Length: 317
Image (cartoon, rainbow, N blue to C red; front, side):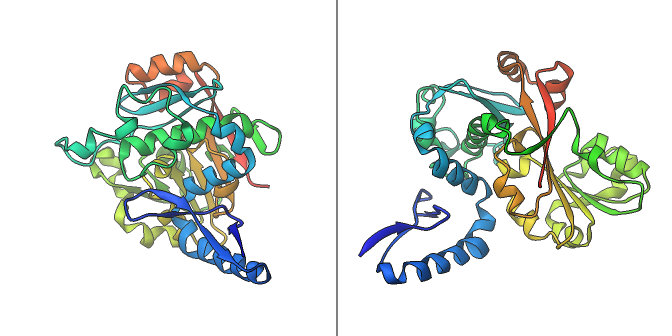
């Protein structure tokens, strides 16, 4: 009898919110059968809810020794963005998720070994095992995965288009139904000006000026508009707030899907395996300035205004 790990190197949630490797002891003769069963459980039952976890598992499977020795060298959290620098000097960023409650309960200020002033020097592997339901931890984890991914994305394995916004890769000349997740003002103007049918999923209607409120659809009604869309554009923040899996599950076959924004700078393999066609993300070129910008309340717009990052698009082959 020998222990094995599923081909996807999956992890299961434990009762206290942690994660553990998915293992099982099976006879060698039946190992292939059990691997197949576990594959289908993960692919169709668990994996849709684990986009970031899958990406980390992929990184761990290929670069385990590298990740095992990484620790957190520096971190900064601003109102809008969070950035992390790892011990190999790679840098990643993600949206800063706001807390869900106006009051600060103990669970929103005490994060154990990842409580503020305890974070530097901690192992990245330990961070990525923490409970993602805590907004601050989720922002840190996404930034860390982006940092690990940054060098690998530029390795030559992926189709990359430099200095391009993903919307520029779309043909908007023929009338299409497009759903935008998040009230991106520049996208709303460009898409609507081309005469396309536009839905914008957003939690807060006040994010729209008066002349754009006709596009507003409450975010909770995503299942009404995503399945009928020709194109779906999803903010990378959906990776941080753990909503991206539900959104991708609602996408119909044949729909063109874009994930865009600084938070989406993760290794693209898992997103490509889950219906995404294009990832619009950022390559950080001035990491020192990035930390300064974020500490002063900088937004994604300022990354490009001050040439701290460059837009790149990764396209599925």
